[in-house]
Image (cartoon, rainbow, N blue to C red; front, side, top):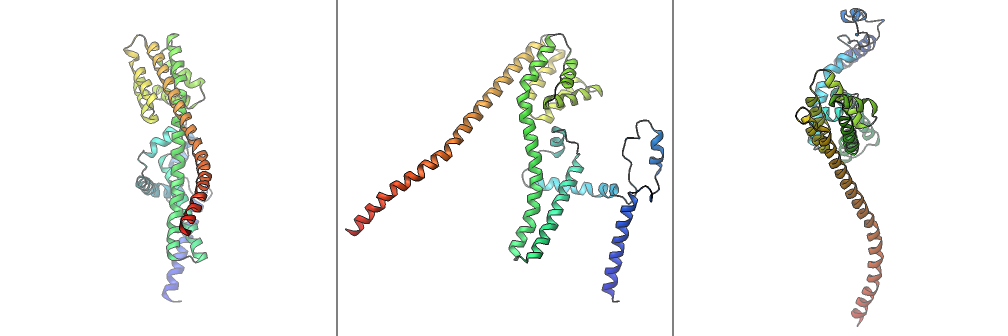
Length: 306
């Protein structure tokens, strides 16, 4: 056995040992529980929390590579013009994933696409330019498709929130005029509603119950939502401690939000109406140009023969 074969055998043995260690460490039968896991059943409220992995476990490797993957994903997204922070977009749509988990899934899919494209190029024996285009292009398309899907979800959430805002503002004004406090109004709408605004207000109510002031919790909502109507409504609601007729001010803001929504709807209808005429115009011009070209070519042929 020569030296190169010995090195390959040693490397394969190390990889097998590492993989077996990772697989066995995930099974409680072959791994000794640490002190935290042994004390977990005796701590109130800690039994439902996930246990931490050992030194060589899937959780430890995730904690090791997650910061690097997060940094690489953020830089790649910024390279293609994505400037909004990922944490803000995930929080806006109330995603169950954090930044690290999202980037881990995204980069895993990108790596899988890279391996699949490299295998495809090796099988078909593609030329070097085509091979480079496939190996680089397919993983980038996978990465950007996941990023674009999240961007579309975020934009859809903002549009839905903007459409629900007039109704929510009217409900807040009605409850304020009925004698409810601002906190009670937010809690009632959050508990009874089912839309995007109600989910956002549930977060606002939870922040208030955690000890944050109403104005600060509403400002956090406006910073996450990044909708002009939400900023104006929060600015009006922040006057709750200063204005005696807060219900009337919120009613005026609700009317303004409804007018803005009506104007955007009219603009959208007119824009779609204009887009309808594009294929009609093309379908009309092409036969007209053909009909005009026939006598024009005949006249040119006549003058050329004469």
